[in-house]
Length: 249
Image (tube, rainbow, N blue to C red; front, side):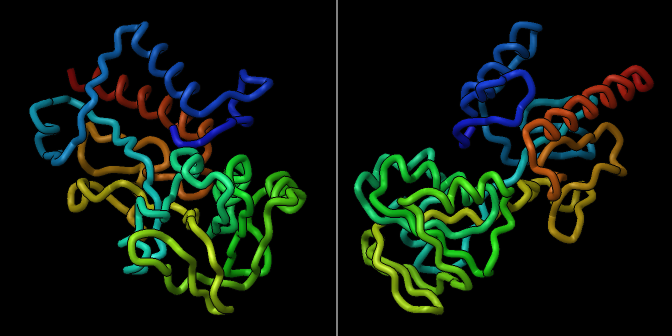
């Protein structure tokens, strides 16, 4: 929902916008009778397979992963005041302004490229001397005249009282009006802690001891993190649920 042009999902030779792809999937599911409940789950009880007021014989956990932050007090204080983790959400607020993107993967490259539509200058700050992003994304970034890169650099402080005015790095100060953090994700498994099997990083394991609990998507996948692999995992989980219910009717 927070990406722009999706070029690696089968069936769309010219690509498709992320939100449009998601809404198409939702409409397709609704057309075959799926009911959507747009609420936030605050607590689950997997011993009885109840979710708030909803009860079920089986549950698929597909909560995905959420943005990872730098962990700086000044960063947290200025979220929404120049600090963001979503260029597609906030880029328009930085028209003709100088911004920084922190990160070195595909997500950081995509953030930087999207920001060039609005910002006057985009600086990518990366703690290493090489990106881990795919070659095609690197080529697009390095070939864009609006984007500059500062290698072997880490942000240690975000400057400004009520809005971002710059950052301090291990290599000095950089003046800017926006900071976009694109350093990865944390699995959204907090509400399931103590109830499902997690790996040391907090990702859900596919193999669960609790009967009727199934896992799909980025909530367990810290390697591929692609829309098509998440869709595949969803298909696996749905078929496993079908088999489980037929055996435990």
